[in-house]
Image (cartoon, rainbow, N blue to C red; front, side, top):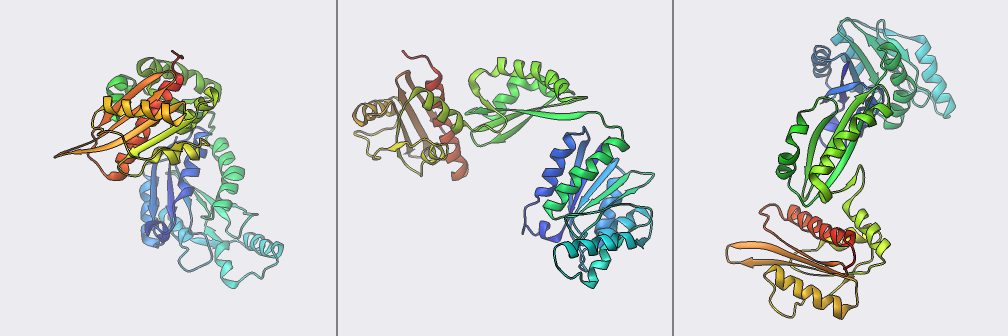
Length: 387
């Protein structure tokens, strides 16, 4: 079984609001083992909505739409589904009473245009909406099933959980779950990670994929199984093999951020951190502070020119000694003719580490790369045994 999510609304195409509904639906479909193959967004246009749904029915078993079920003239999802499935819209007195009852509960007068929401495609299964004015509906066809949900996130989430997921589970005898495990790496490029685990990325269940960010690459392991426990059993050996190959390049799992890991390690050590930098704004300080670490900031005045890693290390040694901190980190952006690079150094009770980064890209990406590298240097020293 596979599915497509179609989110409907011109405001989505204009970038006026972020489409969070599709993400929520995607995550919920994993809990019942329904594979999501496509996500589509279309504006409030009858012909285009009908065309998108028709295309979806030709390639998936389940189409879930969100949006366009309101009472206004531009809410044409009902008409679009009816046209795509070749059936007329019919009026439901029962749905109208449910809509009227909703307005009575919230102490408001139902407008005449709310009657439009009581029309659904002929033969559709109505899904009453006790938390809003837009009933949902399910259309079963020979090509597949179309499920139309309101676009208001609160209403969509309620109906998805209480009506749609149980319907799909029962209708298609879905007995599986799809579970994902994220392994988070830092200061290693996507190509390097790919080279190390390329063969594992050819697996079919679980599957392994990469998501690259500046200075960080996430490794996604996804398994489909009859239960969470069985999915975990599929994921475990693959995770173990990836960890064996990559070692401490992996800093955390799932929602962990590298600064959170660093904050925990610093807290366990009882270390105070001091940072100095020369060049663009330093993201290390703000990220550590967001994780609860009050890093000291030293004046950005090195006692001698700093262009190499060894010179950066010497500055960090002096700062650690004079500043009375456990960990001193320095970051220096160097421009040497046509060459531009950043040298970084960290000195701690467990040792010293340094790095040089040449990164020709957007300034914001470069800052993120530098911050991730420095945080990783601190992390590795905090994990090292005391010398």
